[in-house]
Length: 382
Image (cartoon, rainbow, N blue to C red; front, side, top):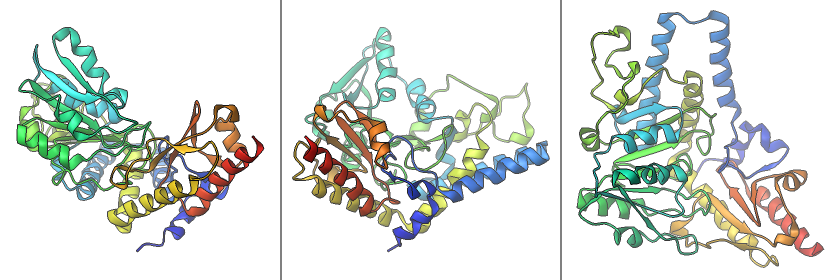
């Protein structure tokens, strides 16, 4: 088992606060900062000629391979983009769908998983939305909305404002049995919870990299199964989706046969350096130990919050549906906000009378104790 206490050494932010906010932005480790700074320093010092530019594209291929190992897919099935929403549009914009067809999702999904379908209402596309029950969305509630005109089922692996973790394998197996494309937003899980696109029978997966993948804004990636790729059209074509970047011909369209065809322009090569460093460290630690560490701390949080007057966990999900996100209810009269938490050395997200904790492998029980001790003091004052 990795020594996660040693991992804390790489996170300077932990020296001055209990950083429990990976669900908003992950803490950037020093080695990731160093990788990006080194790239930027070379770029600043040397400029960039065509040779260096093509080497950057070669590096992107290396990162594809690293992601492939992480989520169990071929690198040819991966496309990069500027964010989760931008790469998710590969699916939404190109899936064959007609007047009278429908798409199934649910009410607590992130807006980028719902809004594109609502936008197509005038085209006759119906968005079928399953209800959440105290934050939970049983897989059966999605299945009940599926019929012969369903063209996609879309879920977030982990819901950003509830922390509910969906049973991707159960949903994937159902969709595969019905030959319905299954799309997943993994922004709130990738880097913390294990993902195996083959075992989970995922057809399309998209994520940003600035949360649990501990990187900067400006980079996301998508996995597209070969079967789905054969179904998808191409509404938007850019110069970068070609087979060979060294032989771009403005009068010859030589698109890549792989997912790279959906890349429209240059990539965030600095962010790719950061992502590569994170994934290599994740693989060194191991996906299973990382997930176990996260869920161990979440279980500790659940137990530590019990008995604090006025405090409760929203959802109180069973272990198989827990994630690194824990939503904590507190009395509105406490008048808490992000600034108040920061004054007490805690970084988390406050919205109304609820605090969102994003607990990652670099956290420890002392971080949780700092948070729960603060809540106990609040309860004692009131």
